[in-house]
Length: 207
Image (cartoon, rainbow, N blue to C red; front, side, top):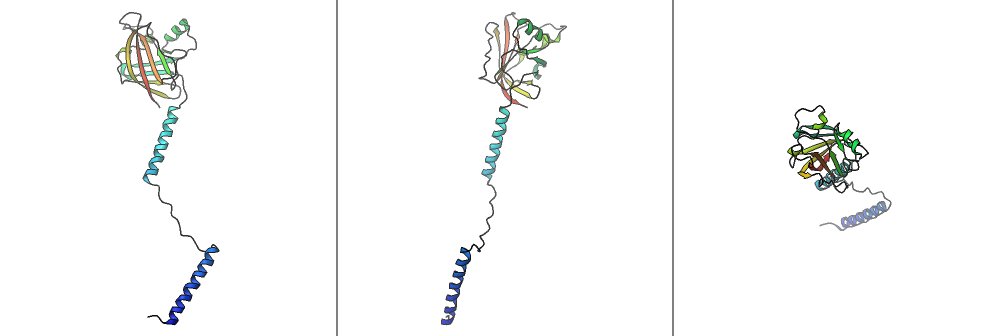
């Protein structure tokens, strides 16, 4: 059992300690406990990763619209240059068609709207001008086939959705920019001159 003198000592010690602590604390001399930064949780890291992925996707989606300069369809062996005339004059368009595929003036650009390309095709085995074979085999495409269209800077990839044979009077193409698609057209060399094959393809991505 503590003696009276010992209890007295402890009492005064505690009082002095408390007074000293209060004084030092009020003077800002008592160091604060170190706070270690907690590592980012898995959820935080996931959110950051997803946020960056969305930004990258938006940046890709918002790539500037560009003129097509080349079209490649591996399945049917198409590899042709694409002209971008400003005039819809028949003679002018025919002149460009004698060199390859043509983007119809006023139709969409790559990355924006409906890009409408048309070109010659022929059933003749031998022709002097290979441009008359530009869109040979277009009728053999099926849903799911890939089409690559090149600009001066990027490659735009499209996936075929429909292949239809229509009368030229009904082969009307919507040129608005509400859809980001590709439309290809050529005559039916095995049928009536008024028939056209029309291929539609959805935009997938640009590289």
